[in-house]
Length: 295
Image (cartoon, rainbow, N blue to C red):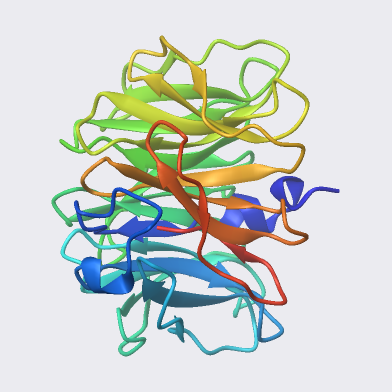
C-alpha cells in the first residue's frame, strides 16, 4: 500500500513557511535564503515527529519529542506557533506549540480522530477534520480549542481543509460523489461546490496559492499520485510532476513562486521543492525514514 493511502496521510500534511522571493533558481546557495523555514513530519527517530528546517534543507531540528506520533504541522500566520496532530492519548487530537517546541497545549479532547489542522489567515481560528460524528467532516474552532463547530454534514468523508488567503473560503477533499473530489465552501460552511469534477479518479490535499488564484492538489488520474494545479474555479487543471513514483502534499511558499511537496522517487518519501510551474525540482531532505507533510 502506498504511503499516500495510509492513515498517517489523513492525519497530517507538512507546512511551508516564508520562502524568500529570491529563491528562483537551482544554483542558489543558502546565503541567498532569508532565514525562512519549513515544518514537516519525519519518522527518522522511530516514530513520527514534527521537525523544522531552513528553506534550503539545512538546520533540520526536532520540535516535538513524544513516544507516540506527532504529524501534520501547520504554521500560525505569524510563524510563532505550530498546530499539529498527536496520537499520544490513544487517538488523534489537535495540539499547538511554540515554534521551538515549548508550551504545548491540547485543543481537542475526543475518543475519535481530530487531525489535519489549518490556521485561518488572521490567526483566530483553526479548521480541522474529525470523525467524531461518523465519517470525517470539517470542523472549526478558536485557537484555544473553544467554540468547536461542524461545517460539513454529509454521509461521506470530508478531509484535508485549507483556507483561502482572505479567510472567506475553505477548500477540502470530499468523497460524497463516490470518488474523492476537491470542494470549496464559504468559511461558514455554506456554498459547498465540487470544483475538480474528475470522476473515476482521486483528488485530495488541496492547498490555496497566496494570491487566491490557484489551488494545488494531488490526483491519481494518470495511474499514480502526482501534483497538479488548477485555477480557483477548477479550470485549467495542469500536472506539475510526472514520474512513476508517488508525489504528494503540496504546500505553497507565501510569495507563490515555489511549491514544497513529497516524493518517494528515491526510495522513501522525502521533501522536495519546485517552481510553481513544476520546473526546478530539488530534494531537500535525505533521511533513512519518510519525511512528509511540508509546510
